[in-house]
Length: 93
Image (cartoon, rainbow, N blue to C red; front, side):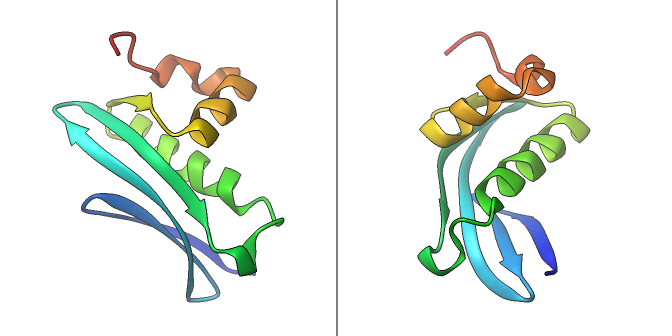
């Protein structure tokens, strides 16, 4: 299964074997990325793809030296379960 995440303007697109499987919608404000919603198409659910998508988004945020505000409940819960990503969360909300 070939999983790819591509940063685009306003979202990150998740593809599986070339087929669009989901998105993580974002807003950028200066050096802060606000994750507003994450979704995986019903046909692809149950494979851990939402977690892979969130990890890819956060890895990209880290690589660009930015911070994140997780307004998306899934993203917030994922960060809470992965302490090594909590340093990316912007303190001012």
